[in-house]
Image (cartoon, rainbow, N blue to C red):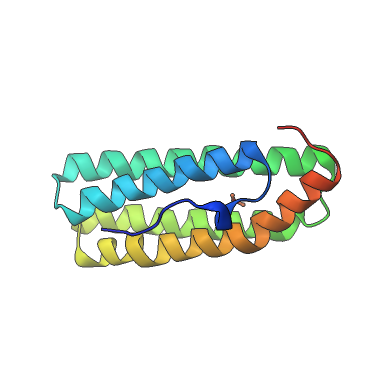
Length: 138
Ligand code: FEO
């Protein structure tokens, strides 16, 4: 089971984004728990779907605000989102073919969590600074 917990080190200084990150972390934890405790394929597929849906929703929220507010680093930020979504798609394909393998658990507990923490602390926090500087109230 994963150890990830939201704490202040993950705050980007904007409530709207922080709240969505907390929810995203919860969805990843739910998925990790489902895979780690060898729940049935249906249940794991469901938690995987919930996590992917929320990821899409969250990325769209950030991108919508970036576009609306003329964020200068939009392209590089969106590219990271697209790469992550592509990795998730591969993960789903593997799950559909092979079920909840050790590789899936490893993917969730290392890749997803490491990617998210790194993304939040670097690229999202830069966007958070931009939002704070322009006085964004989300
Ligand atoms: Fe919070 Fe750029 O994802």
